[in-house]
Image (tube, rainbow, N blue to C red):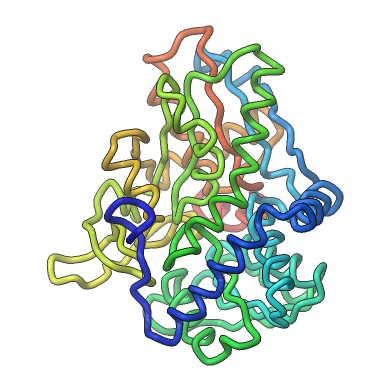
Length: 377
C-alpha cells in the first residue's frame, strides 16, 4: 500500500527493498522516543539555530497591499532549510550504526548541509553533484570539501540533479550494510518522502506559533517554491487541515513537474514527472539549480489531485526580478529558488486586501547565486 493514495511506493531493485524496510522500521521505532527527540531538538537549537525568525516586510507589504511575512530559513546554519533534514537523518543513521552517509545535491545547499551533519556527528560523507551544477555552484563545492566531504562530479546524462540522484542510488546499492543514503527532498522511494517531511515540518510548526503571537490569528496565504518540494511540505503540512488558508507552490517554469508533467516513476517513486508520451525523462531548465529536477514529491502530487494546494510557475525573468526586489527593498538576498515564491506576489496583488496576511517561506539565502545572477545582467 502506498502512503499518498496512488502516489509513492518503492519502485527499486530487490536489494534496496530490504534496506528501505529496515530504515522504515528503525525510523518508526525511534522517532518518538524521548532520547532521540531530546538529542534532535538540542542539535536544532544549539547547532542549527532554531527557531528561525518570522520577519515582517514593511516595504513589500506597502508595495503589494497586504501584510507580508518571511519565514527566515535563510538564517538557519548553512543558509537554507536543508539542515533540518540532514541533522535528523544523520542522527537516525548514527542510531542505525551506519558509519557513512551519501547524498545528492543540485544547488549545493543539501550537499553543504549533509557535509555539516556528517562533520558534526562524525560520519564519513560523500556527495554526488552534476557537472553543470558544480560549475555554477563552485562556492558550495568548496564548502563541502572544507567540511571534510568527498565531492563526486557526475558527468552522465544532463549532468544535473537527476543524474546525481541516479549515481547516489547506484552507490548505495553497493554499500547498504554500512551506508545511509541521506536523500535531500520529499522524493524517492518510501519511506524517504515521509521522513524528510517529518524533519522539515518544524518550519510549519514554528510558523503557526509565531504568526499567532504576532497577529493573533493564522495567515490567509502561504507561498513556497517547489522543486522536489521539501521546504514547501515543511511549511504547508501544519496548515493542510486549515481549509481557509490558501497554499501555493511555485515551480520553475522550465521544470514544472506538477503543472506540466505526467504520472510515472522516477527514482523509485510514482508521482508527477516531466516525461515524453513514450516515458522518456525530459530535459529541464531553471536558473535555480535546486529547482532543476524533472520530478516532485508524491505528497505534492496528492495535494494537487485533491486541489488542496495551488501549484503555479515562475520563469527565470520573474525569479530574477523578485531576487533583486527583496535584496534592494529589505537588504535580504534570497536564493534563486526562494525567489520563485516571491515572484508570486505581483500575481496575487489584485486578490489581496490590506488586512490579508501572506507568508513566504524564504527557503535559503542567495550568496551562492551572486555569480549566476551577474551572468543575466
